[in-house]
Length: 291
Image (tube, rainbow, N blue to C red; front, top):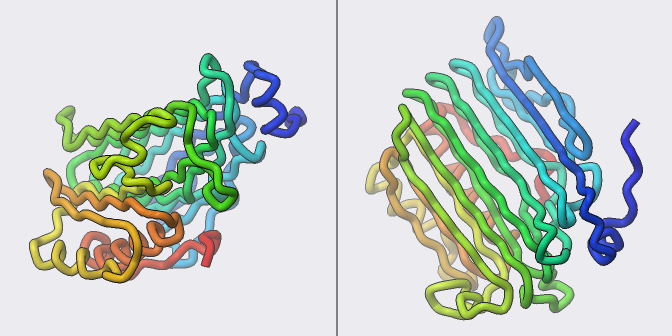
């Protein structure tokens, strides 16, 4: 039985440091042409819904659920994902992630480690993360690519509940993303933002916007014509800014602007444009994503 949890905001205010230690281990393999979620282990507050096959049996869609409603200080989530040779998987989350305010000595964290066998593909496409004012949050994502494997993933982060007029005045946010292949780094990304700091308003930082996002494709390098086409997918009258950069055996797209919905729409458009090239099939939007 899952132990009940008081309201996350109340828990954060009183400085509860016990914290959830959530865990999800998901391993996929191919049997008789079907990609199966063959091994599953979860510990509250994480669980995974039953596999979905909106694109046929060759590609498995999975939805991770955080049952506690959000992260507070002292909470940690560990997610380990493995995909066997020729497996094709898309993983998303059931709702936006929330990181509530806490004391500076009570950091919330999430660690994701992904291991892809030769000629497998994983698309890691969670819904946005909302970092509340006073939150202290560290996230880390490591992807280990075997030769011929492909990983596509995005992260969208909103600082403060901007719909309520809240800004990120206090707190700490740290993010790291590591892409490795054959024990060699393909791309290492480190980001750090302190609440109330100058980068929130600097032209070289958030420029006053509350939302940032990154979309990364590794294991497939678009040609120059595709890069040009991706830049043209961004509406010129849309507030915010985007960037598209080629990586070593990959691609990086960045978003900075006022809207997590706009970030997701652009990332989906990029994904729809690229997927027939790197996976040989059209993109099928997850049914749990907001319309």
